[in-house]
Amino acid sequence: MEVILAKRAGFCFGVKRATQMAFEAAGKDHKTTFTLGPIIHSPQVVQKLEDMGVGVVKDLSGVQDGTVIIRSHGVLASEMEEAHHKQLEIVDATCPFVKKAQEYVKYLSADGYSVLVVGDADHPEVQGIVSYGGEKVYVVASGDEVCKLPKMGKMGVVAQTTQSFDNLKSVVTECLRRGGEVRVFNTICDATAVRQQEATELAQQVDCMVVIGGFNSANTRRLTEICTELQPRTHHIETADELNPDWFKGVGRVGVTAGASTPKWIIDDVLARLEDINNSH
Ligand code: SF4
Image (cartoon, rainbow, N blue to C red; front, side):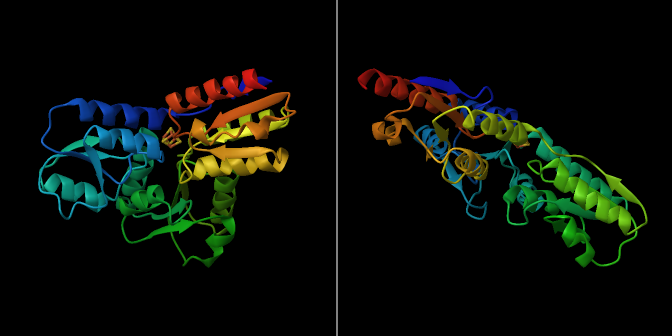
C-alpha cells in the first residue's frame, strides 16, 4: 500500500507560531500561565500544554495575575483591554493576518466608514475582528446579505481570513451596486484554500483518504467533506489510535492530509501506524 501525504498537511504559519509561543511561555518560570480560550483547535496540543501547567480560562473574570496567552484567531478588544487593565503579562499569539483584519476594521471605523466583515458571525475570529470597530460594523456571510443592510455612505470591506476569494468578490460587487465609496482590504489568507486544493487533487488519486485533525476544527471538518465527496472511503481521525486496519483492505493507495491545527507529531504517528498496518497485511 502506497501512502501519499499532502505537501501542506498540518500547521499553517499562524498556528505554528502560536503553538511555539505558547510552549515557550510554558517553559518559563511564571507564577501562572494560561490561554484565553483553547490556543488552537487541537485537543492534543491543549492537553500537552495543560500537562506543562498551562490551563485554559474562558474569560478573565476570575484572573488577577499571571501570564495570558492570546490564541491564534484573536480575542475581543474588550478582553485585551481587561488583560492590560489587570496588568497581566500578555503573550499575544494572534496570527498577524488576523491582527491586520482587526486593525483595518478599527481604522475604517475611526475614518467614518460603515464596515462589512465577510464571514461567519458565530466564529470567534470574526467576533474578535468586529469588536475592534465602532457601532456600524456588520457581518455578512455572502453578497445576498448586503441588500438587507441599512443605507450607507462610505463602505469598508474586510474578510474573515478563511473566506473564499469568490465570496469576498460577491460582497464587494453588491457594495459597488449600491453606489458610493467602497474601500476594500483583502484580508484572506490562502492557507485554507491551498490545503483544500491539495486535498481535492489527492482524493481523486487514491482508494482511501485519512484526514487528521481536531473534531472541533472547522477547517479539518471541511477537508473531510471535500474528500468524502470525491472519495467515499474517507476517515476523519484525531490520533493514530483511531486507525482501523479494516479500512485499508484492498487499498492500493492511501492519501493523508491534516487540518491547519494538526501538529506534526500526530501526523508522524499516523504515518508510522499506517506503515505497521501495511506490513501486517
Ligand atoms: S489560516 Fe491563515 S490566518 Fe488563520 S491562523 Fe493560519 S496563517 Fe493565520
